[in-house]
Length: 249
Image (cartoon, rainbow, N blue to C red; front, side, top):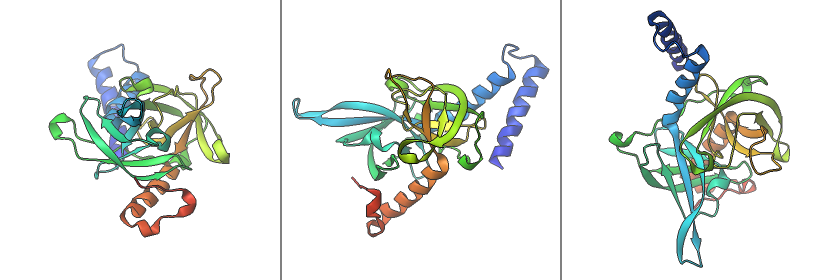
């Protein structure tokens, strides 16, 4: 239903622009780009990992990554490697408002972590859960967008296609894309033209340290399966599966 409304709104917006001759420099492609940005950007957060420095005697910022709002319970999803060994974690909205977060579930093998934060006041920009798609329906050549906080800078969006559906690290089926993925994009969102999450950017293949157009994302259906399991186990530690190397901090 929500997807249908989104498509209808997009068509209506495009038609109204043409009919009223407003912003004639906007192509139909640019209208879609803007619609995706407007829909997804409100669900994105920057994730900061602070580690204790024995030399300084206090915690310092070690690295930054990306994350997105999962549900109405203020759960944030990101990559496990973004928050590993953190002494403290903070999540930051586009507005600059921040909250301390805690890890309630983490799976190092699948590289997925769940954070939880206290709600942000509505005046500061409420947390908006991201819309989720179906990664079983993606295909090579499909247009995708990658949103995240590359190099710790403000939220940005890149565009590309799904390059392939292939075996990634450890033989897992990951989504390959040529949409630019850089340091800081880990834990971000790979979405389709409807602004639906289809994957979580996790790693790249590179010889220079930067983006070479060979990036990989964890399919959303696998993310959902792991997140559901972690949330159940966070409420009942007796359910924790030892063979998944789960750790609750």
